[in-house]
Length: 497
Image 1 (cartoon, rainbow, N blue to C red):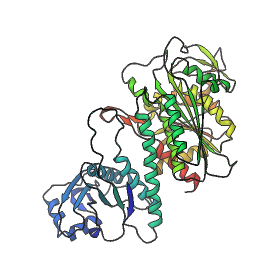
Image 2: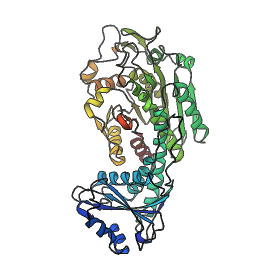
Image 3: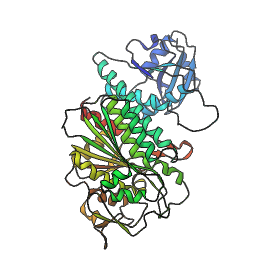
Image 4: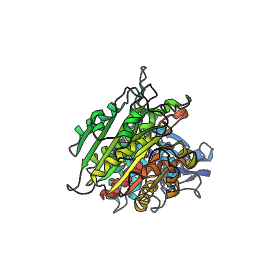
């Protein structure tokens, strides 16, 4: 996909299609009025017949209008002017891209009315145009044997108008938006693969392939014996019920001076989660292939900083296992020792994500991180608390938490902070070990974070629970690519790009 900017009159743009916005009740936006004037009032005539209402995300393709360099015009509804803002704008552009993808249109110019610059400045406008356009053309990497549908013809998108002094910000936004969409594709492609393809070893191979493609990246993969040498008893306990061997992947981007404290990202990579002996219900268990979405997001983030040549040291740690219930599987009541030396009573084998993360977080300590962020589809309780709209964020560093929340707002990939006070850790008390891996039904998302907090003391740490946001079910089942946009904004800001 190629992205450019436009600045001259919209009616003179030589593209296959102009995309213009219309408010409800047929109110034309400024660019739509320019098109209408050039076309001799044809748009107003069409609207007066009631062919298009301007309702949010409604679209109508109109061909062969006179007076235009473009051969077609796509009308997209912006909803009411009173309610118009950043979210309706994004919906309108996404709907337009979806409509364009169904046609043979190869080039289009975005000439949508946009919210005020405070809501969507030139940089974030360009970024949103490119990110939404690229994401809208994503196709699930299915394994169907039938004839594949043709990819969308759309290959060139223009964003504008570029006012004097805004060109640089727009171009930077377009470049970053395209890179973020490419990174989200990395996450989605990995997460959408079935568990018999995307195994811990497959994740490791994908990290190796990524490192081969970028000079700034290096990779180290710890196999089962190396993990044993690190005394990662919690991670190994989860893996012991599976014939698939575990892997710990360390992917490093060297973009700043040697010795500069890195940002460390840790991802939960349970490539399939049956629940182990505490087995899950069979309904929708297939969706547990997405339980490695945190790991996929970490790999995606490293691909992004490498592509953008970010002047930042970033380390991605992926703890990859399969959680299965065979005769060697860990049992409720078993006690294991973590790499930190702390003992854990495993009361529920389906609370396995925190077990692999705790050893990975302890491993991160050796890098003396400037910021430590873990990403995990950790708790169903987070879905109950926040639905599928916000990721949950908790941690021990308020400045880092605020940084992530603000990045999510800017990226339209929002997170919401939950409390993490000492009372929640008390729910993890055990009569037989230093603590248990669950704390009861109440506050499940928070007690899971409290467990992780026992391994992150002394490091600036935040935990993102993406159980409700990383994938969607139903007719559109698949990975959403979240929280890659949030992470991208966080890293881009940290790097000063």
